[in-house]
Image (cartoon, rainbow, N blue to C red; front, top):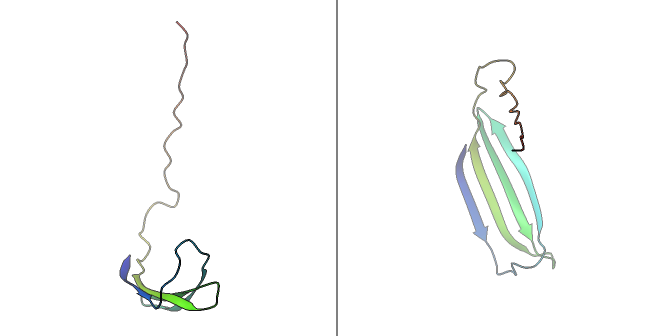
Amino acid sequence: VPLDLSIRIHRGFRADDWMLHGHESVSAADYRALTTGWFVSPAGRLVASVSQETALLPPVAGPAEPQRAAPVLAACTTP
């Protein structure tokens, strides 16, 4: 579940141009995670950076195997 997302635009860029995107997981502990990322122009200039904090939900106890619906068989008849 995302808690916080920020995007910082550092300088103008062309939206129709290629961008290099890098990201890393900075921390993950106590059911929370923080990631950061960056966008670099073809000229090698940092144009934007992003960060996101996320709440990691503990697994929900449930059946070992997920239940699947029975396949639907359709009959085709010609009048």
